[in-house]
Structure formats: structure tokens, C-alpha cells
Length: 93
Length: 444
Image 1: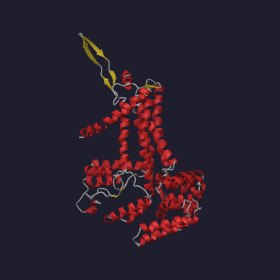
Image 2: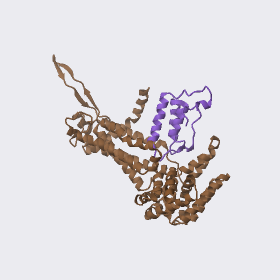
Image 3: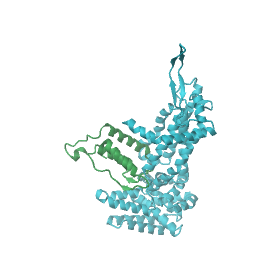
Image 4: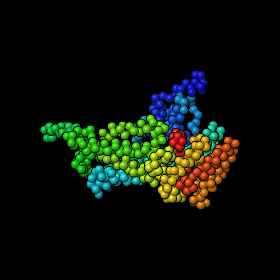
């Protein structure tokens, strides 16, 4: 992905913390699989969080994810709500 | 940084912790028995959360019934420029099927503080401080004082029977001949004394495993689809088991009771058909051809849910539950198999089949409005209508609608003509392509 987006742009923002956070979210997704999803949005909150952390790094990504979680309530919106474009994603999603 | 973050969070929870602590102390003043009180507290708090769980699970199931349709929409309106239109279409879909979007992730997340508070309070009653051995000089004489255990139960109101008792016992929570403040890994004077602790840990692990396996048993398709997840879910209780080894027995009481309540809620939800879960329905369809007993059983359970959530109208659900759902499980299962066989022959893709199925609820509910037992053909007509209404543009949609229409009518002729058949089709959306292939093989 990084190569595709441009020659010298490299995936530098996904450091240790971001990687751990993504791993944690992935394990949550694995453990939760098989149960119906309760998310009102597309992508779901956890997918959104992974993408956000991947694109924006741990801090900004986490805050984006937190804001999304707060939006995902019975009085919030629903439907398609993509992660804002950011840096080059480190892992293909 | 972390401390500056955790302190305010702790302060937010303080009143809650104190409140739950005083509830626990109240229970103790009525029944002076620690494990019983903890069990009572757990039951009370979890029951308070149950309506939330039930409601959100219902919504989730309804959303999931629409899953295939959603996927179709997603595929159709790919790309950022179509987003607004896709949202609109989704709204329409919800409205048509009378489904509210699920309550969302936040309510689920909000349950966590409740468990955090409960856990903290129960753990808090085992809080002790050991005053190390020291010497004091009294009137010129040195006097050595052995180490002392002082109980400082957290969150338990100060003038209360519970606090007095715990402090008097130096933090020991003695009931049923054992000290519930001890862990399995604490030093026990003999192996025999450790056995009840071991039983508590085993019980906690076992119940957690049971909960997981019950959930997966209803949902075999999901575990098939993701064996890695199934594996992890299987070993999760074991991993927790390591934690249970080293927590106070009273916490294991809490784990046991909460797992038991979870299993109960789960079972009741399944039995009542509120949450058959799409995969369960798929299994019913898949196994229907082969095994008779359990498949029928599952279909039966699956039916009402599909009615209740798929159509989104409580009334339709009710009728499905009483009439179609339970009265003719065998017929329903048979109809399901026959029908699906037919649809397979018609050369439908799995997606089309699913779509058709999930569109049925709307038809079903409309049929219910017109005349409950309503002829399948009529339902088909309304399905078609809604379909074309929803997809006003594009030749490809038109063809999709046509396909669905054709399929629905084949359903109609195939169906046994009773409402059960109609409802059975509702279950279809949740089917996995693989199980469909399996059924196809069986049909041949």
C-alpha cells in the first residue's frame, strides 16, 4: 500500500502502541465473532477504530475511534461513516 | 499521565462504588453470609442490566436479518460519491422493514462500568493491610509486636454490621466453613481445605466454557466460518482460569453467578426466539433435510425471531410465535427444505436467495395486515412492489427485482401454503452459502 501511494512515502506512523491497539481490537473482533453486531454504522466501530489508528496513528486514531463510539448510540446517526483520509495506511485493509 | 487520567475516573465512579457497597452492606445486615450476599448483589445488578441486553440483542438480530440486503446496497453504491444515496437507501430499507437501527456500540460499552463497579466492590471487601512486625518502647521496655493483618474493606459504609464483622475477623470472610477472602493459591493448611476453593475455580471456568459453547452451538455457521475465533473462544475460559486461581474465592462466587445469569438470559432469549440468530436459522435449513429432531427444534425456535425481528412488527412476531412457529415445526422444516431445493434449482446465487429471504419479512408483515394466513402469492406481489419501489433506477436493479420476484413466486407454489412456510423463508437470509451448497447436495 505504501509503495502504491508514492515512492518515498513510508509507513512510519504505526509504532508500537498503534500496533498493540490494533492487535487488541483484532482479538476483540475474533472473540466477539459469531454474535450479532450491534453497530449502527458502516464500517462497524471496531473496524473503524482499526482503520483510524492505522491511518492516523495511536493518539489521533484513538480519539477518532472514541468519537465514533460516542456517536454510535440510539440517538446518533447511522449508515456509512468512513474514516477520514489520513496518512498512508500501514497495512492493507 | 496515567495517574492524572485514572484519578478523575476513580472520582467519577466513587459515588457508584459507595452506593453498591452500601447495597452489599444492606444485604449483609439482612443475611449475614458473604457469598450469599455477593450472589444477591450480582443478581440484582445483572437483572437491572437485562432489559438493556434484551433490547439491544433484539435490535441486533433485526439488523442482522437485513445484513445481506445491506451488503448488496454496499456493493451497489461503492465509492464516496454514492454515500449519500446509499444512506438514503438504507434508511428506506429500515423503514420498509420497520427496523430501528441497532442501539449501537455505546450502550454496550456503558454496561462495562457496571461490571467494573461490581467487581471493584466485591474485590474491595477483601482489602487488607498488613502492619509489619515492629517494636514499640513502652515505659523503657522494648516490646515487639508481630505482624498484624488489618482489614480495611473498601466502599462498605463505616458504621455497618458488615464492616464491623470483617474488621473483627481481620479480613476473613468466613462462611460455610471456609474463608472467602483466600485464594486457591493461598497457603492452605491442608489439601482438603483447598478443595472447595478448587471447586469454585473449576465452577467458574466450567460455566464460562458452557456459556461459550452454548452460544457457539446455536451458531455453528459462525464457528465454521472462522475456526480461529472458535478456537480462541474455546480456550478463553482456560486463560481466565489462570486469573481465577489467584483471586479471592468470593470473586469466584461472583464469576460463577454472573456466568450462570448470562447462560440463563441467553437460553431464555433463544428459547423465546428473540435471538435465534441468523446462523441458527441457517443450520435449521441446512440440517433440515438430514436430521429430523434437532433441526426441527431449531427451526421452531428460529421462526418467531425471524418474524419478530425481520418484520420488525411485534404483532407479526407474536403471530409467528404462536401460530406458525410452534404449531408446525415439522411442516416448516419440510417446507424449508423443499423450497430451498427449488430455489437452488432455479440457479439462484446465494446472495439472491438471501435477499429474497430477508425481503420476505416485509411481505409477511404486509400479508399479516391484509389477512394473516394470506396467500403466498399475494405476499410475493407485495414483495415485488416494495422491491421495485426501492430500486427505481438502473436496469440491473430491475433484473434483480425480477429475479427475486420469480423466486418468491416459486416459493409460493412450493410452500405448503401455511404461514409457517412463509415465515421459514424469513430465516433464509441468514444462511451461509456453504450450508446452502450442503443442502443442495442433499437435495440431489
